[in-house]
Structures are given as structure tokens and as C-alpha cells.
Image (cartoon, rainbow, N blue to C red; front, side):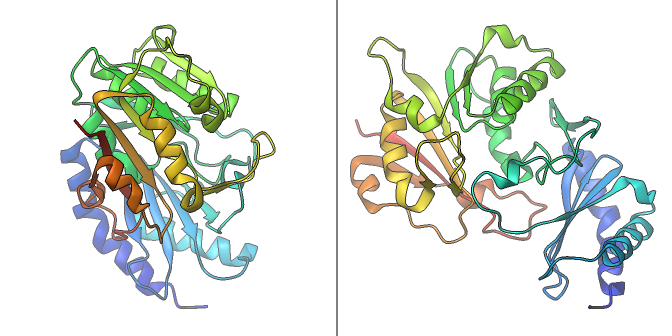
Length: 309
């Protein structure tokens, strides 16, 4: 095991300037350490007074190693050990990243610009808020009022909340009843009435394939599928490299002329099907959507697609 003193020193060195930046940006959830030292491949995210630590070292960490890591982070950040949450960040098949790890986690509210989001730091591998999508959510808060947004694979609806705050009417689609309820709670937390928006429990792929002819088109479509999923509730297997062209083609059929489809993927090695550029106007917006606090510029790829005139 590597000596963790260099890790602790990096946390101490980064804490004050990063907190100062976050305060100025009105952000309470941000990345403090992003595997800065390759031999110490941890991820440390701060959520208000709490720290979430993803241990990406090879092998299963022992209880003693986890306790040591918690003690080091607690000391470096000067916070109680009970506010340090350790998670193993392994590659997990299908929808396993959304599987419950425990019960009884108390929701925490964190600010992001004008939004407030409910996060759960203990019960799942992920917290309910994808920090790398912060710049995209910022874009959605600036949308013109009166537009219509379709949010596919919506998770806890953070993008929908950002758009709804701008006066956009949103429809959020996800296969999980738990996450759709979480999304509605996020709306309520921001003083938004969920009854004025749509929350649709469905496999997004099947939803896209069944558009009624009379259904109005959307000005904005947000498509952020999992990299891979073999959820028992889904029909078949989703592989984003193999299936993204079909998904995008279907989603563009729901996108109004002059509208924009935002497509994002966390697949590290991803190649957009070149046929899409022949059919639609495509722009790679990745560089503009990586947060300042992320060292890993490959955390996601992001594109916009528009119908050709």
C-alpha cells in the first residue's frame, strides 16, 4: 500500500483555493481531488461539510484500509470522520451503479447556482448528482422561457430542474420509480410544482420508438444514456457505442426543426458514428462542458445535434 501522506498533503493544499472558487461560483458540491497523483487513484468530492471518497485502487479494500483512508481524509480536511463516506469505484455491469448499497441515508441539500439538489451520500454508489454535468445544467438554466424539454434517462432530474427554473416545460423519462420520485422531490425542493411537468416511467428506448403522430415535438432533448445496461426491466442490452446512432436517430425524430439535441456519454473511448454528421449538424462541445474542478478531461463526451435546414 502506498504511503497516504502525499495524498493528505495534496488535499490540504487544494482545499482553501477550491473552496474559495466554489463559494464564488455558488457551488456546494465539487471535486477536490481527481486522482491528481497517479499512484494514489482516489476521487474526493465535497458535498457541503461531507466528503465522498471513491477508492479506485485495485482489489477489495480491507476494513482496516478503509478506516485508514477515512482517518487520513478526516484529518486533512479537518472534518469529523463520520462525515467521510468511502465508496469502492469499480466498473460495475448494467445498472449495478444504481443498486442500493445500504438503507437509511439522510438526504442532504446542496446548492448549485440557483438550484438546490437532494443527494444521498451513503445508500448508492452514486450520490444522485453527476458533478461533471454542472456546466451543462448551467446552460439549461439560461434557456428561454416557454420551451419544451425532453430529458431521457433522466436519473434524479437535475437537468430538468435547471431547465424548469428558466420557465421550460419538462418531460423526464426513466425506468426507475425511485429516481422519478427523487426527481419530483428535487422539483419541490426548488419550489417547482411537479404537476406542471411530466415524469414518465419507461425504458427510454421503447419510449422513443412509440411517439404518437400527434405528440408535440421538443425544442431541447437531453440524451445521457448509461454506457452499458442489462437491467432486468429493460428489453435486451444497451451498449452505447453500438446503439448510440439508433438512439440519436430516434431522439431527433422528437426534436423540433430548429431544436437542439444534447448527447452525452461517459464512455472513455467513444467514437461518434460518422453517418450522423452527414445527416445532422453535429458539434463536439466536450471541451466547453468539462468543469473547472475536474482534472480528468475524459470524464464525458458531449455533442449537440440539429436538423439540417
